[in-house]
Image 1: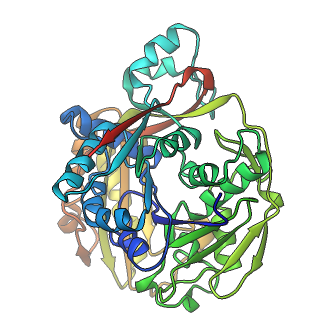
Image 2: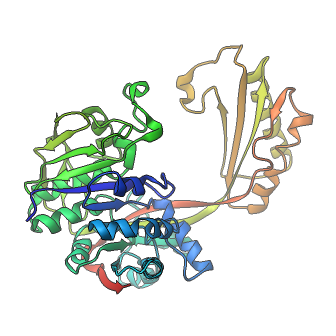
Image 3: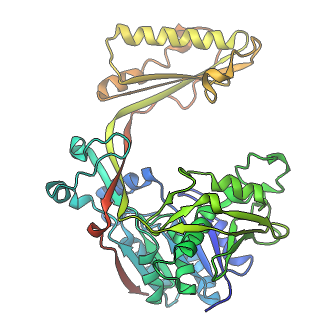
Length: 453
């Protein structure tokens, strides 16, 4: 058993800094590289991509990244764990295998599947598993014909199995963000399935670094002006120990900052009930977390308590919920805010005259109250410019399409001093809605497959 392992975060979402994983691999010692690509809406995007192309459905950025870092990872024995597989982990693994072969490298790749239940929905509903919406209580049957993706959140244990099978690269679908970090700790330190405190500690470690540089100085609310060299921000690393304690740090000579404050800010991100942070692997009690300064850019985390996991898994379901379009115009001083409000009244009157019906019309005045709403108060009459942003949402695509043709005419038929028609004519887009649900763990059977390059 190792005395310490270093797990580096290289991606906090699909679209994060493309060179962050490269720097994590090349700028200092690490044992594992964790790459988190998925969010709830991402799965529906990937499902649509795969519907158009059976070979798609995963984070395409991941393959060229692996082509770049695989030689170093192999030479330094760095293992990569990711959920970049999306709805097609096998296709992603084949692409990585082919990249490894082009490089002349022998790499053992594992896929972790079993999370995608899209093809099983009708059977599940027929057997009385209603997949009710956790927020509204409505049964999934009410939107079944509009479902676009359905994925259960897998925990760390299937990833551990992949590591035990010698995988150097582990590619999962909808594995939890925290499980990507917890899995190496379970594997290296031989933690047991009922070792709740240590599992909770590993879960907290995963939660701290799952959003990349958000815990090492990025998006920091506290004294953000003092964060050094964000242009060269360092991504976080967890130094984990067998007893469940760990240190959050980053590579030397990188920008950003790891401090008690930056770690605290990340801890409260999507936390929910602080006494019951529920994952497939355990329930972590965030009120037991203790933090202490362990030196420059080093925070020690300890004292974490956990409880047994539940007998259910969360399911992320997306479904089609109509159409939307958003248009913007910018009005300039003098009386910029008054002009923007007048343009909104004119636009709404025209939409009403046309007999167009929408589920919602939302107007925001960017620069005035788009962020804080009524708490913003009235702006100064000398405000130099205001962006009028109007969005509509509805079930009738034709009505939404007609709305998109009513923004530009305001330039010559509305208030004066329109200084910008941002982005051209608005585009009609599908609305993808989120349906959170629960499913018995007994219904989900994760699978691990090994692919050799």
